[in-house]
Image 1 (cartoon, rainbow, N blue to C red):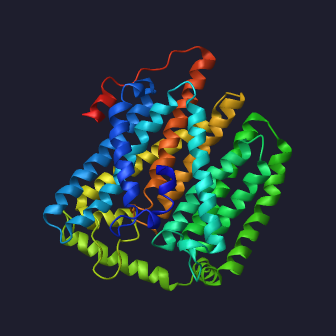
Image 2 (cartoon, one colour; image 1 turned 30 degrees about the horizontal axis):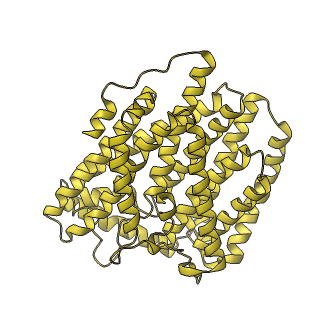
Length: 420
Protein backbone atom coordinates (compact mmCIF):
# COMPACT_ATOMS: atom_id res chain seq x y z
CA UNK A 1 0.00 0.00 0.00
CA UNK A 2 2.80 2.41 0.84
CA UNK A 3 4.56 1.81 -2.49
CA UNK A 4 1.27 2.29 -4.33
CA UNK A 5 0.24 5.46 -2.52
CA UNK A 6 3.40 7.41 -3.36
CA UNK A 7 2.45 7.43 -7.05
CA UNK A 8 -0.87 9.16 -6.37
CA UNK A 9 -0.24 11.92 -3.80
CA UNK A 10 -3.08 14.02 -5.20
CA UNK A 11 -5.52 11.14 -4.76
CA UNK A 12 -4.35 10.31 -1.22
CA UNK A 13 -4.74 13.76 0.29
CA UNK A 14 -6.31 14.44 3.67
CA UNK A 15 -7.73 17.90 4.44
CA UNK A 16 -6.44 19.14 1.08
CA UNK A 17 -2.79 18.19 1.70
CA UNK A 18 -1.22 16.02 -1.00
CA UNK A 19 0.32 12.76 0.15
CA UNK A 20 -1.14 12.90 3.66
CA UNK A 21 -2.14 9.24 3.57
CA UNK A 22 1.35 8.27 2.40
CA UNK A 23 2.83 10.24 5.29
CA UNK A 24 0.62 8.48 7.84
CA UNK A 25 1.49 5.06 6.42
CA UNK A 26 5.18 5.97 6.32
CA UNK A 27 5.03 7.13 9.92
CA UNK A 28 3.37 3.86 10.93
CA UNK A 29 5.95 1.84 8.96
CA UNK A 30 8.77 3.88 10.53
CA UNK A 31 7.59 3.04 14.04
CA UNK A 32 7.11 -0.63 13.19
CA UNK A 33 10.35 -1.03 11.24
CA UNK A 34 12.62 0.73 13.72
CA UNK A 35 10.99 -0.92 16.74
CA UNK A 36 10.27 -4.43 15.49
CA UNK A 37 12.96 -5.17 12.94
CA UNK A 38 15.86 -4.18 15.16
CA UNK A 39 16.68 -7.67 16.35
CA UNK A 40 16.39 -9.16 12.85
CA UNK A 41 18.55 -6.36 11.43
CA UNK A 42 21.46 -7.51 13.58
CA UNK A 43 22.11 -10.08 10.86
CA UNK A 44 22.78 -7.24 8.43
CA UNK A 45 26.41 -6.87 7.41
CA UNK A 46 28.48 -4.29 9.23
CA UNK A 47 28.95 -1.93 6.27
CA UNK A 48 25.24 -1.73 5.49
CA UNK A 49 24.32 -1.33 9.15
CA UNK A 50 26.86 1.48 9.57
CA UNK A 51 25.57 3.27 6.47
CA UNK A 52 21.96 2.91 7.62
CA UNK A 53 22.76 4.31 11.06
CA UNK A 54 24.72 7.24 9.56
CA UNK A 55 21.96 8.12 7.08
CA UNK A 56 19.15 7.89 9.60
CA UNK A 57 21.12 9.83 12.20
CA UNK A 58 21.58 12.63 9.67
CA UNK A 59 17.89 12.45 8.73
CA UNK A 60 16.96 12.56 12.43
CA UNK A 61 19.04 15.70 12.96
CA UNK A 62 17.31 17.34 9.99
CA UNK A 63 13.95 16.49 11.55
CA UNK A 64 15.05 18.06 14.85
CA UNK A 65 16.18 21.24 13.09
CA UNK A 66 12.88 21.35 11.20
CA UNK A 67 10.89 20.99 14.43
CA UNK A 68 12.92 23.74 16.08
CA UNK A 69 12.24 26.03 13.12
CA UNK A 70 8.56 25.93 14.08
CA UNK A 71 9.44 28.34 16.88
CA UNK A 72 10.38 31.21 14.57
CA UNK A 73 8.89 30.53 11.15
CA UNK A 74 5.84 32.30 9.78
CA UNK A 75 4.02 29.09 8.80
CA UNK A 76 4.85 26.35 11.33
CA UNK A 77 2.74 23.66 9.66
CA UNK A 78 4.80 23.86 6.46
CA UNK A 79 7.80 22.52 8.36
CA UNK A 80 6.07 19.14 8.12
CA UNK A 81 7.07 19.06 4.46
CA UNK A 82 10.73 18.66 5.39
CA UNK A 83 9.88 16.20 8.16
CA UNK A 84 7.80 14.02 5.84
CA UNK A 85 10.69 13.89 3.36
CA UNK A 86 12.93 12.34 6.05
CA UNK A 87 10.34 10.05 7.65
CA UNK A 88 10.38 7.82 4.59
CA UNK A 89 14.00 6.94 5.35
CA UNK A 90 12.99 5.55 8.74
CA UNK A 91 10.06 3.71 7.13
CA UNK A 92 12.12 1.93 4.47
CA UNK A 93 15.81 1.49 5.28
CA UNK A 94 15.51 -0.57 8.52
CA UNK A 95 12.63 -2.63 7.10
CA UNK A 96 14.28 -3.41 3.75
CA UNK A 97 17.62 -4.18 5.41
CA UNK A 98 15.93 -6.57 7.80
CA UNK A 99 13.99 -8.24 4.98
CA UNK A 100 17.22 -8.79 3.05
CA UNK A 101 18.65 -10.72 6.01
CA UNK A 102 15.91 -13.35 5.80
CA UNK A 103 16.44 -16.63 3.91
CA UNK A 104 14.09 -15.49 1.10
CA UNK A 105 15.17 -11.85 1.33
CA UNK A 106 16.04 -11.46 -2.36
CA UNK A 107 12.60 -12.69 -3.41
CA UNK A 108 10.90 -10.22 -1.07
CA UNK A 109 12.97 -7.36 -2.46
CA UNK A 110 12.12 -8.47 -6.00
CA UNK A 111 8.42 -8.22 -5.13
CA UNK A 112 8.93 -4.64 -3.92
CA UNK A 113 10.69 -3.83 -7.20
CA UNK A 114 7.81 -5.43 -9.11
CA UNK A 115 5.36 -3.24 -7.21
CA UNK A 116 7.36 -0.13 -8.14
CA UNK A 117 7.42 -1.18 -11.80
CA UNK A 118 3.69 -1.91 -11.88
CA UNK A 119 2.84 1.43 -10.29
CA UNK A 120 5.14 3.29 -12.69
CA UNK A 121 3.41 1.53 -15.59
CA UNK A 122 -0.03 2.40 -14.21
CA UNK A 123 0.94 6.05 -13.76
CA UNK A 124 2.51 6.23 -17.23
CA UNK A 125 -0.61 4.63 -18.72
CA UNK A 126 -2.88 7.20 -17.07
CA UNK A 127 -0.69 10.03 -18.32
CA UNK A 128 -0.52 8.67 -21.87
CA UNK A 129 -4.29 8.13 -22.02
CA UNK A 130 -5.07 11.41 -20.26
CA UNK A 131 -7.31 9.78 -17.65
CA UNK A 132 -8.17 10.95 -14.14
CA UNK A 133 -5.88 13.66 -12.84
CA UNK A 134 -3.41 12.98 -15.64
CA UNK A 135 -5.01 15.14 -18.33
CA UNK A 136 -2.38 16.38 -20.74
CA UNK A 137 -2.35 19.93 -22.00
CA UNK A 138 1.22 21.16 -22.20
CA UNK A 139 2.80 19.39 -19.26
CA UNK A 140 1.28 16.34 -17.58
CA UNK A 141 1.46 16.13 -13.79
CA UNK A 142 -0.43 12.87 -13.35
CA UNK A 143 -1.66 12.71 -9.76
CA UNK A 144 1.25 14.87 -8.59
CA UNK A 145 0.92 18.59 -8.02
CA UNK A 146 3.57 19.55 -10.57
CA UNK A 147 4.86 18.03 -13.80
CA UNK A 148 8.43 18.07 -12.49
CA UNK A 149 7.39 15.69 -9.70
CA UNK A 150 5.97 13.25 -12.22
CA UNK A 151 9.19 13.57 -14.21
CA UNK A 152 11.28 12.70 -11.15
CA UNK A 153 9.13 9.64 -10.45
CA UNK A 154 9.37 8.42 -14.04
CA UNK A 155 13.14 9.00 -14.31
CA UNK A 156 13.68 7.16 -11.01
CA UNK A 157 11.64 4.18 -12.21
CA UNK A 158 13.39 3.75 -15.59
CA UNK A 159 16.57 2.02 -14.28
CA UNK A 160 14.46 -0.39 -12.20
CA UNK A 161 12.50 -1.42 -15.29
CA UNK A 162 15.73 -1.74 -17.30
CA UNK A 163 17.38 -3.87 -14.61
CA UNK A 164 14.40 -6.20 -14.43
CA UNK A 165 14.34 -6.36 -18.25
CA UNK A 166 17.91 -7.61 -18.60
CA UNK A 167 17.65 -10.11 -15.73
CA UNK A 168 14.25 -11.53 -16.64
CA UNK A 169 14.09 -14.99 -18.19
CA UNK A 170 10.45 -14.52 -19.13
CA UNK A 171 8.17 -11.67 -20.16
CA UNK A 172 10.98 -9.68 -21.80
CA UNK A 173 8.69 -8.28 -24.47
CA UNK A 174 6.25 -7.17 -21.77
CA UNK A 175 9.03 -5.50 -19.79
CA UNK A 176 10.36 -3.83 -22.95
CA UNK A 177 6.88 -2.43 -23.58
CA UNK A 178 6.78 -1.27 -19.96
CA UNK A 179 10.11 0.52 -20.43
CA UNK A 180 8.75 2.31 -23.51
CA UNK A 181 5.56 3.26 -21.66
CA UNK A 182 7.46 4.74 -18.70
CA UNK A 183 9.70 6.65 -21.11
CA UNK A 184 6.60 8.04 -22.85
CA UNK A 185 5.18 9.03 -19.47
CA UNK A 186 8.43 10.90 -18.83
CA UNK A 187 8.15 12.62 -22.23
CA UNK A 188 4.58 13.71 -21.56
CA UNK A 189 5.54 15.21 -18.21
CA UNK A 190 7.32 17.90 -20.21
CA UNK A 191 10.13 18.12 -17.65
CA UNK A 192 13.29 18.90 -19.60
CA UNK A 193 15.62 18.26 -16.68
CA UNK A 194 14.11 14.90 -15.86
CA UNK A 195 13.95 13.87 -19.51
CA UNK A 196 17.69 14.45 -19.84
CA UNK A 197 18.41 12.83 -16.47
CA UNK A 198 16.18 9.84 -17.25
CA UNK A 199 17.59 9.17 -20.71
CA UNK A 200 21.21 9.65 -19.63
CA UNK A 201 20.59 7.54 -16.54
CA UNK A 202 19.18 4.78 -18.72
CA UNK A 203 22.28 5.02 -20.88
CA UNK A 204 24.55 4.86 -17.83
CA UNK A 205 22.79 1.71 -16.63
CA UNK A 206 23.19 -0.07 -19.98
CA UNK A 207 26.85 0.98 -20.16
CA UNK A 208 27.42 -0.44 -16.67
CA UNK A 209 25.62 -3.62 -17.66
CA UNK A 210 27.77 -3.88 -20.80
CA UNK A 211 30.93 -3.50 -18.69
CA UNK A 212 29.54 -6.16 -16.34
CA UNK A 213 29.15 -8.57 -19.28
CA UNK A 214 32.55 -7.68 -20.76
CA UNK A 215 34.33 -8.41 -17.48
CA UNK A 216 32.68 -11.83 -17.47
CA UNK A 217 33.11 -12.40 -21.22
CA UNK A 218 29.41 -13.06 -21.60
CA UNK A 219 26.93 -12.31 -24.41
CA UNK A 220 29.24 -10.47 -26.86
CA UNK A 221 26.48 -10.26 -29.50
CA UNK A 222 24.19 -8.49 -27.02
CA UNK A 223 26.92 -5.95 -26.30
CA UNK A 224 27.47 -5.25 -30.01
CA UNK A 225 23.73 -4.98 -30.62
CA UNK A 226 23.39 -2.60 -27.69
CA UNK A 227 26.17 -0.37 -29.00
CA UNK A 228 24.42 -0.15 -32.37
CA UNK A 229 20.90 0.41 -31.09
CA UNK A 230 21.76 2.93 -28.32
CA UNK A 231 22.15 5.95 -30.66
CA UNK A 232 19.00 4.91 -32.52
CA UNK A 233 17.02 4.74 -29.28
CA UNK A 234 18.31 8.15 -28.23
CA UNK A 235 17.22 9.60 -31.55
CA UNK A 236 13.82 7.91 -31.18
CA UNK A 237 13.42 9.41 -27.69
CA UNK A 238 14.14 12.90 -29.04
CA UNK A 239 11.69 12.40 -31.88
CA UNK A 240 9.05 11.28 -29.37
CA UNK A 241 9.69 14.40 -27.31
CA UNK A 242 9.42 16.60 -30.41
CA UNK A 243 6.16 14.96 -31.48
CA UNK A 244 4.44 14.71 -28.11
CA UNK A 245 5.75 17.83 -26.40
CA UNK A 246 7.03 20.43 -28.88
CA UNK A 247 7.41 23.10 -26.17
CA UNK A 248 9.71 20.94 -24.06
CA UNK A 249 11.70 19.94 -27.15
CA UNK A 250 12.11 23.59 -28.20
CA UNK A 251 13.32 24.68 -24.74
CA UNK A 252 15.66 21.69 -24.46
CA UNK A 253 17.28 22.34 -27.83
CA UNK A 254 17.65 26.02 -26.90
CA UNK A 255 19.50 25.10 -23.74
CA UNK A 256 21.69 22.48 -25.44
CA UNK A 257 22.64 24.95 -28.16
CA UNK A 258 23.88 27.45 -25.59
CA UNK A 259 20.86 29.74 -25.57
CA UNK A 260 19.10 31.00 -22.46
CA UNK A 261 15.66 29.53 -21.96
CA UNK A 262 13.13 31.39 -19.82
CA UNK A 263 12.97 28.52 -17.31
CA UNK A 264 16.74 28.65 -16.76
CA UNK A 265 16.72 32.42 -16.28
CA UNK A 266 13.87 32.05 -13.77
CA UNK A 267 15.82 29.40 -11.83
CA UNK A 268 18.94 31.57 -11.67
CA UNK A 269 16.85 34.41 -10.26
CA UNK A 270 15.24 32.00 -7.79
CA UNK A 271 18.65 30.72 -6.62
CA UNK A 272 19.90 34.29 -6.16
CA UNK A 273 16.88 35.22 -4.01
CA UNK A 274 17.19 32.01 -1.99
CA UNK A 275 20.89 32.54 -1.31
CA UNK A 276 20.20 36.10 -0.17
CA UNK A 277 17.55 34.80 2.23
CA UNK A 278 20.01 32.24 3.56
CA UNK A 279 22.69 34.88 4.06
CA UNK A 280 20.18 37.02 5.93
CA UNK A 281 19.53 34.10 8.34
CA UNK A 282 22.79 32.11 8.19
CA UNK A 283 22.36 30.05 11.38
CA UNK A 284 18.63 29.37 11.41
CA UNK A 285 17.33 29.88 7.87
CA UNK A 286 13.79 31.09 7.26
CA UNK A 287 12.30 27.81 8.50
CA UNK A 288 11.85 24.35 7.03
CA UNK A 289 9.40 24.03 4.15
CA UNK A 290 8.78 27.76 3.80
CA UNK A 291 7.97 29.13 0.33
CA UNK A 292 9.84 31.96 -1.35
CA UNK A 293 7.09 34.51 -0.90
CA UNK A 294 4.62 34.24 -3.76
CA UNK A 295 7.34 33.27 -6.25
CA UNK A 296 7.85 29.52 -5.72
CA UNK A 297 7.29 26.85 -3.06
CA UNK A 298 10.96 25.85 -3.02
CA UNK A 299 14.36 26.81 -4.43
CA UNK A 300 14.65 24.17 -7.19
CA UNK A 301 18.04 23.11 -5.83
CA UNK A 302 18.69 20.75 -2.94
CA UNK A 303 21.62 22.59 -1.34
CA UNK A 304 20.26 26.09 -1.92
CA UNK A 305 16.91 25.01 -0.44
CA UNK A 306 18.46 23.70 2.78
CA UNK A 307 20.68 26.77 3.11
CA UNK A 308 17.66 29.04 2.69
CA UNK A 309 15.38 27.13 5.06
CA UNK A 310 17.73 25.75 7.74
CA UNK A 311 20.86 27.86 7.31
CA UNK A 312 24.42 26.57 7.56
CA UNK A 313 23.47 23.63 9.87
CA UNK A 314 20.86 22.46 7.38
CA UNK A 315 23.08 22.64 4.30
CA UNK A 316 25.89 20.94 6.27
CA UNK A 317 23.62 18.02 7.19
CA UNK A 318 22.24 17.55 3.68
CA UNK A 319 25.81 17.71 2.31
CA UNK A 320 26.84 14.95 4.71
CA UNK A 321 23.87 12.87 3.61
CA UNK A 322 24.65 13.34 -0.09
CA UNK A 323 28.34 12.49 0.47
CA UNK A 324 27.37 9.31 2.32
CA UNK A 325 25.08 8.34 -0.53
CA UNK A 326 27.71 9.09 -3.19
CA UNK A 327 30.28 6.96 -1.35
CA UNK A 328 27.68 4.21 -1.14
CA UNK A 329 26.97 4.50 -4.89
CA UNK A 330 30.65 4.30 -5.85
CA UNK A 331 31.23 1.27 -3.64
CA UNK A 332 28.05 -0.41 -4.86
CA UNK A 333 28.83 0.08 -8.55
CA UNK A 334 32.39 -1.17 -8.15
CA UNK A 335 31.21 -4.17 -6.14
CA UNK A 336 28.49 -4.91 -8.68
CA UNK A 337 30.90 -4.81 -11.61
CA UNK A 338 33.68 -6.93 -10.11
CA UNK A 339 31.52 -9.39 -8.15
CA UNK A 340 32.69 -12.91 -8.95
CA UNK A 341 29.46 -14.85 -8.53
CA UNK A 342 28.12 -16.39 -11.75
CA UNK A 343 25.01 -18.08 -10.39
CA UNK A 344 21.58 -16.83 -11.41
CA UNK A 345 20.95 -15.38 -7.95
CA UNK A 346 24.32 -13.60 -7.91
CA UNK A 347 23.80 -12.16 -11.41
CA UNK A 348 20.31 -10.90 -10.61
CA UNK A 349 21.50 -9.31 -7.38
CA UNK A 350 24.52 -7.66 -9.01
CA UNK A 351 22.38 -6.17 -11.78
CA UNK A 352 19.80 -4.89 -9.29
CA UNK A 353 22.64 -3.24 -7.34
CA UNK A 354 23.61 -1.41 -10.53
CA UNK A 355 20.00 -0.50 -11.33
CA UNK A 356 19.13 0.87 -7.91
CA UNK A 357 22.41 2.81 -7.85
CA UNK A 358 21.40 4.62 -11.06
CA UNK A 359 17.93 5.28 -9.60
CA UNK A 360 19.42 7.07 -6.61
CA UNK A 361 21.87 8.98 -8.83
CA UNK A 362 19.00 10.12 -11.07
CA UNK A 363 17.14 11.53 -8.09
CA UNK A 364 20.16 13.40 -6.72
CA UNK A 365 20.98 14.96 -10.09
CA UNK A 366 17.35 15.91 -10.78
CA UNK A 367 17.13 17.69 -7.42
CA UNK A 368 19.81 20.15 -8.44
CA UNK A 369 17.44 21.69 -10.98
CA UNK A 370 13.94 20.36 -10.45
CA UNK A 371 12.52 19.46 -7.03
CA UNK A 372 14.22 20.17 -3.68
CA UNK A 373 13.72 16.90 -1.78
CA UNK A 374 10.01 17.65 -1.52
CA UNK A 375 7.62 15.36 0.37
CA UNK A 376 5.95 14.09 -2.82
CA UNK A 377 9.21 12.96 -4.43
CA UNK A 378 11.32 11.98 -1.39
CA UNK A 379 10.00 8.38 -1.52
CA UNK A 380 11.67 8.03 -4.93
CA UNK A 381 14.99 8.67 -3.18
CA UNK A 382 14.50 6.60 -0.05
CA UNK A 383 12.91 3.49 -1.60
CA UNK A 384 15.64 2.96 -4.26
CA UNK A 385 18.31 3.75 -1.63
CA UNK A 386 16.77 1.26 0.81
CA UNK A 387 16.62 -1.31 -2.00
CA UNK A 388 20.27 -0.63 -2.83
CA UNK A 389 21.35 -1.16 0.79
CA UNK A 390 19.24 -4.33 0.98
CA UNK A 391 20.57 -5.77 -2.29
CA UNK A 392 24.12 -5.00 -1.17
CA UNK A 393 23.44 -7.03 1.97
CA UNK A 394 22.13 -9.91 -0.17
CA UNK A 395 25.19 -9.57 -2.40
CA UNK A 396 27.57 -9.86 0.55
CA UNK A 397 25.60 -12.81 1.94
CA UNK A 398 25.91 -14.67 -1.37
CA UNK A 399 29.67 -14.07 -1.39
CA UNK A 400 29.98 -15.26 2.22
CA UNK A 401 27.91 -18.35 1.40
CA UNK A 402 30.03 -19.19 -1.65
CA UNK A 403 33.29 -19.16 0.32
CA UNK A 404 31.85 -20.50 3.57
CA UNK A 405 32.64 -17.38 5.57
CA UNK A 406 30.66 -16.25 8.58
CA UNK A 407 29.27 -12.72 7.97
CA UNK A 408 30.78 -9.82 9.90
CA UNK A 409 28.62 -9.03 12.91
CA UNK A 410 26.67 -5.82 12.97
CA UNK A 411 27.98 -2.98 15.13
CA UNK A 412 26.84 -3.78 18.68
CA UNK A 413 23.80 -1.73 19.59
CA UNK A 414 23.62 0.02 16.20
CA UNK A 415 19.99 -0.70 15.53
CA UNK A 416 19.24 -0.60 19.23
CA UNK A 417 20.36 3.03 19.06
CA UNK A 418 17.85 3.63 16.27
CA UNK A 419 15.07 2.13 18.36
CA UNK A 420 15.81 4.32 21.34
